[in-house]
Image 1 (cartoon, rainbow, N blue to C red):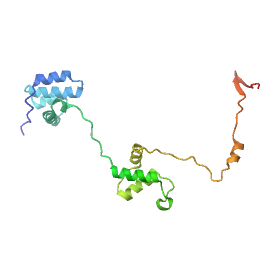
Image 2: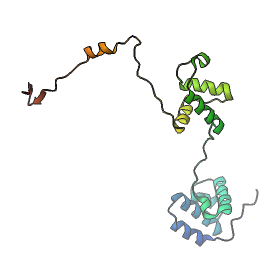
Image 3: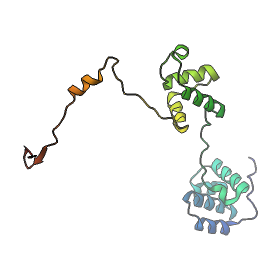
Image 4: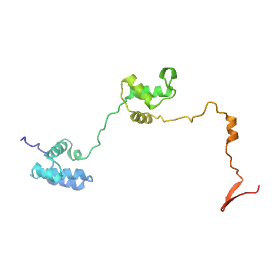
Length: 182
């Protein structure tokens, strides 16, 4: 069995307990108390029991504590996945969306996310999902706008004749509607 990794010499058990008492983060407190057991001469197994974790996790805590001190025992935000589109891709996509599709070339009369995903695949070899592309477009300041459909043979003047109108001279009073005298 390999020798355990030694802890830093600039701290001791009582100092870690004092830091744990002052800490507002419960997880950091638990980690500090587990390492205090090691400083007091306890085994790594006892420290793991105190921290409620396994030996490998205790080793990870020791490495983080040795490298960064007590602040190394705070939880960190996970880095997450890297972005699929870089600045070059975003600039090209923004230029394409702003210029609009050319039906003879692109085969569409308006851009859909599906069409833009296909364009990214052909132009850059990127495989991006429609949802991801929508999120990227929204972050770039684009919004989904759709014109209200209108029949090509619609007559503006004929519409006026069929509009429903409600007389403004009617007012609700009690249980029945009665005309208001003019």
